[in-house]
Length: 487
Ligand SMILES: C[S@@+](CC[C@H](N)C(=O)[O-])C[C@H]1O[C@@H](n2cnc3c(N)ncnc32)[C@H](O)[C@@H]1O
Image (cartoon, rainbow, N blue to C red):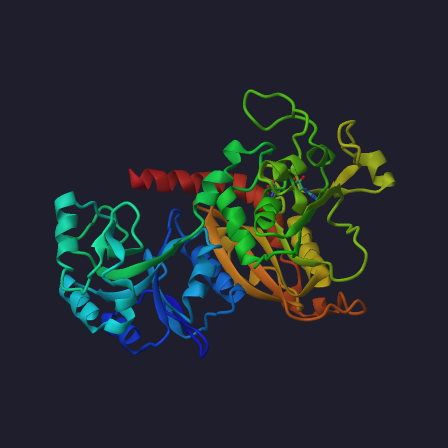
């Protein structure tokens, strides 16, 4: 269980395990009570879904507040939101939620569900049960497969509902769903569901984007191209909207620009790697040695019909920003290098280059000194504080060595408020955290470093050894021990 949220404007209910509390929602609440079917495909990504929904609700004019209790690892969440229009707005953006339904009843047994349905106000049902209407009823059972006969029996048991329209399985006007939750443990599936719901389908989420934007079919990719689903989640955390300007300072192949452009934002980026920006050099695809003509970020956007949203991508070192002063960006959405699959480097001076540069004929840029992770995050936050519009968001991944993790090591800046911090596992001892921050205070040029006297803003140097820890014998040994223990 984690916190649930109430507010005066919006009452949001994510599924709570106390049936009585849920009945209170259904019976007493005059707003639209909906149930969201959430997609949990990755271990420990429930928080990602919760923060996505929270960000999108605030984008649609709703909001969560901080007093409710939510069971995030359930596949069904109950929300209480002001309107069906807002529910549709949410689903036009989310990639974490599959569908949203107007909740008509729920219970912890079939009897409780039927009692709850009998209590649902008839005047709310009737518009969807008219004699001249058509409908169908579906059933979805989470973590259990039912036979067709079992499904039909459950649907037939609802004949007490005042349906007077005609059943139409192909093209019905109204679709209703029975949803049953048999828990999350595939090795321990109960005979009867823990929770049952019945609702009217309102809309589906955008999960098909994951397939249509899959990097498997993308024109230009690199070793670290961002997965399509996470790119959309990041754009949603960044509350990207039409006509925004979104910037990625570690743009690579532009994976994060694509999702923002899909939502109607104008996009640009910079990267230190000349070859990546110019679509030159070695290809990342198997069976292909060199990048072909037109393998570049612009062509990627063109592939999806989004070229009109492409501003540009430039070769530039993010430790030395090239931008004129001023608030330029509505969102900064990025995946900085962790030093695992790509080096963390910055440009060096001509003098340094004589000693230690890795100048290569392909790179066209002197890349000499290593760019420590603590400096990367420090610079990124400072840049965001300066260049984001007020209320604009910074969304980025922070690599973590889990045994050392505490919230204190998440970089801070006095102009940026931490909105969410969601973990995605990489290995048993490493993970990355999707950090979302919002600009809440004007950046003052004269005191840009004075905040460092406050210890909480000092860069955490432990980030610098992430690469060593990632590859360390200790990590491998622990992983092996864990594997042996599981045998
Ligand atoms: C994790 S990758 C980003 C991948 C990108 N999201 C994509 O979808 O392709 C990090 C990128 O940061 C770039 N980089 C490393 N150091 C940099 C620096 N000092 N300034 C700008 N870019 C840098 C690398 O060249 C790499 O392309």
